[in-house]
Length: 97
Image (tube, rainbow, N blue to C red; front, side):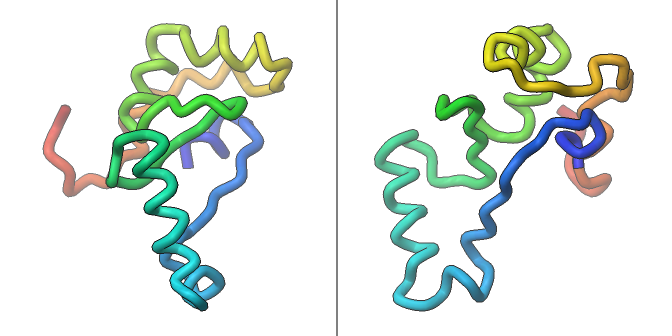
């Protein structure tokens, strides 16, 4: 939701979807992600091929300007005028961070 709100083009891969169930393809990709990132939780967000972390890591980068700098470096267009607190996109049942 956050990337769509900020107009950032992205590709989402749902490893639990039917498309990734055959031959445990989703499980195999999870194993590779864990070996590459050291994380076994999802989402795992990559920008320009670089692992940046999960949702809150991206939200922190949005707030401190690091994401804007990265997007500019990669020549990615986005709506920098969007002034929404990225943490507002988290599910309401989560504990405050």
